[in-house]
Length: 314
Image 1 (cartoon, rainbow, N blue to C red):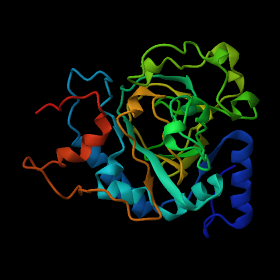
Image 2 (image 1 turned 30 degrees about the horizontal axis):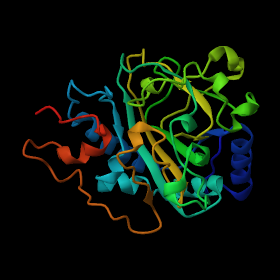
Image 3 (image 1 turned 45 degrees about the vertical axis):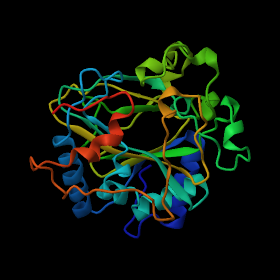
Image 4 (image 1 turned 180 degrees about the horizontal axis):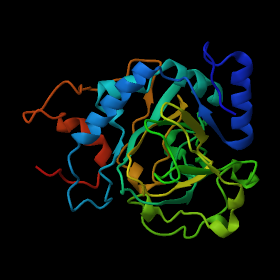
């Protein structure tokens, strides 16, 4: 069912969206989050950030794809503003049961034509060492047993999404009831290995143990959105088409959520969850603050390269 209305999500419509999300761990297409004019502005902003991105150094241990820009909201004012869109927050607040929200991560994911890579079946919960917001333990006493991420992800399409250009596929909770929580280790292909990057976590799921015949393809139009849980099993293909596939992704959690130290190596350098109710204590730049070469300031891209990259190419 598509969720939209001229008055934006009437109460009955919103309840239907929430019920579908509760049953399946995902809901799409959600329509009407942004006007056509605002969508054009978002497209222009994200396209500029993608076009001006610096290339990662060849020594980057994470081999971060240049199409994948992470956490620019920590530096870029316009990106942080985009995380505060009222209609998006309305849905996220109802899903998470609180209006006191924080941004866990943001992501510009742009699969250019004939590029990108396959992302295997996985649960985000395996990668995110987050507590429940009401966990009473002091941070120093937290262990892996306290990992219980309560996160909802917005996935907004800036281009029509098709099977050819790498549409995400999801496996609803109703098709795989065990996935309402992090799946047991027997579902994981290999739980060993390093923690330096997505592929190297070795936490891909064994497709032979999944009810993949019930998968749903998130083929949505420009301006439509999908929301999914940290536990929703999902995957995507590379972009094999001749057209771009760009998405804007924000992961929201309840304020009070904390990172469990020492559980995922890539988080140990510090990970800042940004509360939206209070003014964030961030030193922000703007895309209008140009560098000497007339491009977006290089410092805006600093968060997306993480600790593994020593420097960016000149």
